[in-house]
Length: 388
Image 1 (tube, rainbow, N blue to C red):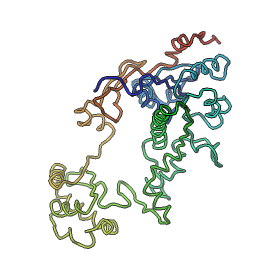
Image 2: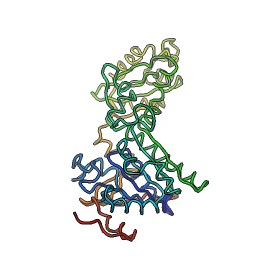
Image 3: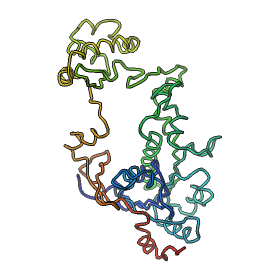
Image 4: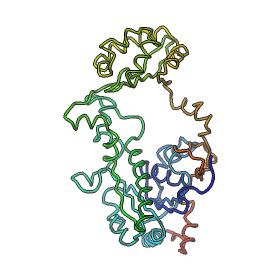
């Protein structure tokens, strides 16, 4: 952990967010010292609070994405709520939302309206399909965008699509929202003016589809692979060992193939065999390549196989469960697990990627719904929320 001033100290972010995409972006802003005021519905708040209770009584998604934020419970459709929101935005640097299509304009919170009222404000709008085009009013959730963006076809096949086990579309949009806000803050430092930034889930995942979409755009059909193999690299898969375990193996270039053939497979002739010497040839003869590895690995246990791979300088990995990852020795050695306060007591949390000795990470509490409402209103010189 570092020290000194956190990069975003002094930056105030107002967020109308729920689920994953918006909260992912703002939690990373909060990690770097921004003050994030999370506006939540008075009748339950961010619905991710109630997805489950698997984080010691808190929704796991909510616990993951909402540390170091302040919760303001507010009815933004009421006169009082509109007054509070206007006062907040007048003093804030960033307004970020992932509201449903049409909701921002109906509330007078669309980017053009807000930047006209508050020239200093950076407005980050996260949507499913972006503004404009025939699909801009469609509702969008992670599964739906993964389907539209063909992620499920490259994880499985067109006939048997498979959704990845993490919220790829939400996380991708959250990453680009986070980095876009940082870009906008840098631009404002030069121009003195805020701006509107649009981040669509479809755009974000289309970018992440890199290889497959590039191949298709150039008129070719991307190879469809199943399991853990790769359409353009071989060998690249999970392989069984003689002791019943498996490991993941990746050979990224022809030099590595020479070492694998010579040191691990024990057959230097394979290094120059025209079926295997070049990566494109290995992809074309993937079944034969895999069979060679499976045959050799059947004679080795995990320790012997990994020792050979290390000697050859070949990348390999254990195939871990989520529980294995929690106990991963590298995370423990680098003290990646920390803890934060929450409404149910202290709970564990992972530090974000990006390590620097120049600053540390804010590890503030996960807020209860409306925990900071009275304090925020008092700071603004406004009356408490009227009783129903």
